[in-house]
Image (tube, rainbow, N blue to C red; front, top):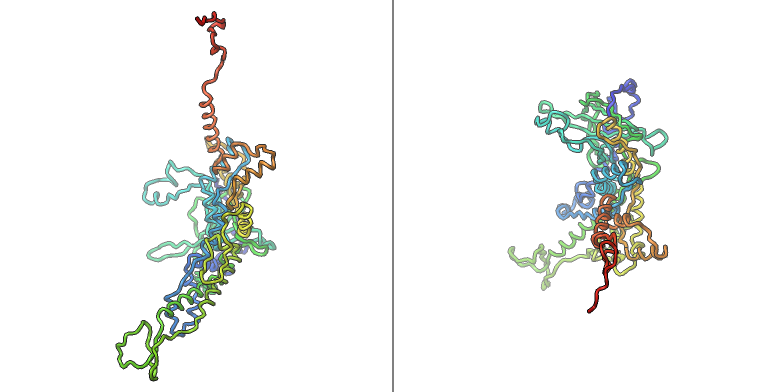
Length: 540
């Protein structure tokens, strides 16, 4: 698995486009992307007050500023919008198929990789992260799933891992903020290398010293590097603070070897963009497209809340009372120097209806841009506006339901394109890595890696009876699927589980049929054991 190699490119440091002594980390051209990741995550978490202060900034020199700050509302409506595509994509479990017989080593390997790495759960988390940032990454490796470093520090184990631990192919998330691709010249969509780099702070004599760890992913190889870092500045040009460093000298990684040969024919790290374009490698997320609208919605909610508070505690006016302890209705009391003034309340035209209508309009634009009908989230959110709800899906045909889901199903299929390729590539590379790592290992059964297929479901409610009737009409009543496949699809099972059910059904059939009769003549009336007929019995 490991191969010691020299690194001749180190004799030409000018070839290192991204990480070398004297350069900045993170690179200047990546600061905006990293700041965007931080900012959009705050929006998704409902912490808009940490990055947006539009209303309080506008009214900061007025008496209302302090009250607005206290009344700030963060309506996290983007949360269910971002999660909806993930729920529809894997809410109904997709089926992974190797295309090989169920008892083959290749098929068993594919199913083991899918199950042991919980790829359905990983996909759900990745799609949500995609909707926030616009990008997610996964990587394949061969190693131990658990981290045993603490056991070594406490002296509980001597080697790298306990004797009972087994290495296995692993597919895992990689933080998009730690990935820095190097694109090919003239082709922004292709990578010549993908770097995974993160800052590690090491305590040394009561002082924390930063180091930069780098994994450089090439086809068939992963190269590890480590550099000393020196704090440079804090970049706030794009909102959130991004700490920058100057890269110092290269230091030892502490590894057995810095060059790992994976045995795969391609890189072992895979990009999953949300919405990809042809002129940039990174994607665009759902939150990014409605960021300004979400800020406006929160400001409008603040305004409505402020108006309602003011209306609930209005000021009064009336003739002088001559008493400082006059009981008031709640707000301030304004004395009017006029005879026979009837006491009253000071009110103003707050345009509350207009505020609700604008809020309704802003919410409608969010649903339109995110391709998510508001009725999917329950109903029309605003009670005081015009209403955008298109209604639910009850008492309609399956075709009508699917047509109403059309905007969001198109979005899910678009997202699925990137997810499908990344997962299939990761499974295929994992098989190559596993075979290479176990060359010559006693007891390991090598196999031919296969490129799997994934059968996705779109998450739209289906009328199974209607589907069966359509199939019957199209085939003239003939079967369209074998019994095993039907069980797999109906109950979301794999081949092994479906086969167990088939075996149990066959056992039931045999038990209900009773013991097999080898010689029916033995039960014939009047029959003899030697096959000769007995004398007829007299009825008398």
